[in-house]
Length: 116
Image (cartoon, rainbow, N blue to C red; front, side, top):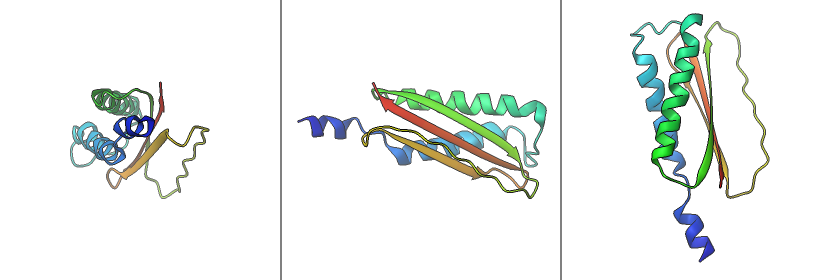
């Protein structure tokens, strides 16, 4: 019985990944084809991405608390390494999605969740 309830409340990870990619596109599409990095716009892009991801997660109506973290970086030929660490039970999860937004930008969004 407990296993059945647990399966019903699982987060659809593939749906979250596709939602994150849609959010990338929606937020940065407003900038047009060039989508060049602009330090003055980066905070706005990140805030919009986090807010829109959170809205989509809340619409799933699952008994979880969420943390959404985003990063936008200018492509300059330098490498990028993103790392995080968490301790959680085997039923909780997290997903990280990175994306080459354009020839000028990288974007990484990480979503963590834990059951209530």
